[in-house]
Image (cartoon, rainbow, N blue to C red; front, top):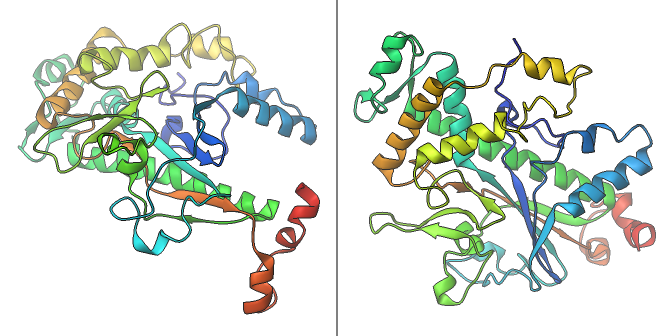
Length: 348
C-alpha cells in the first residue's frame, strides 16, 4: 500500500525530510512583525494554479498573504548589543529600511514523525545513555510490532531530527537569497543573532521579541521555546497535558477528518480518494508505543525533544536596497548584477 510517512501534501519551495513540512517564516520590517505559516494549506490551493505564470505567481502570493499574521505594528525590538547580537553584525542587522526573515521549525513534530517512521518499520528505540529501551517497550516486542534485531539509538534519532530541521530552514534561506538576486535586492544569509532574544526569552527585561512561550528549568542554561500561543504551538507541554495527548494530536493531523490522509481531501494523485482509502492509519497499539517513547523522552529531559530546543531557528536572511554608488566607488566592475542596477526602475 502507499506509504504514510508524509505529513503534509502541500506544495512548497524547499525540500523537507519525509514530507513532514514543519517550518514557518517569521519576518520583520519597518511596519511590524509577522509570521507566514502555509504548512497546513489545502494541497489543491497550490496544485490547481495552472500554467499561466502571472496568474500562478499572484495566486501563490495570495495564499501566503492569507496565511500571514501580523504580530505587532513595530519592528522586532532586538538590541544591537551583546548578548542579543554578535559584534560583527551590530552595524547592519535588523536596521531600519531592511526586511529580516527568520525561518523556524517545529522539532517536536519532526521527532514524532521520525519516531513514527522508525516504529512503523519495527525499530526499537534505545536510550543509548542508559543502555535500555526508551520506555517499557517489552509488550510491543512481544506482540511483534517491534523487531528485537532492529534498534535505533535515541541520540541518533535526535541528531537526525535537528539536522533535518536545520537543512530545511537553510534551503528556505538559500532560495530566498537567489530570489533577492533575481529581484535586484541586496542582502545576505547570516547568523550571529540570539535566537532566544528574537523569540522572546528576555521579555522580563523589556525585550519582547516575537512573544513566544518558554519553558524554564533551573537545571537548564537557557529556557526552551515551545511556540507562539494560538499561532504556532509545538506538540508538547504546556500546550498538551502530556505527550500522550500530543501524540493523539499528531495522529489526528495525519489521519483525522482534516488530515493529510482524510478520504475526502484532495491531493496530487489522479485518484486521490482511492489511494487514501488504501492507507492504513496507526492502530491503538502503535499510538500506545509512540506515546510510551515520547513520554519517556519528556520525563527524562523535562522537554520534547530532549536534547535541543523545541522551536529551531538557525539562520536569517536580510533584504535591503543595494547602495550601488558605494560599489561603483570602491569595488571592481561586476560586483553586482544588472538586476541590482535596474531594481529601482523595474520595481518602483
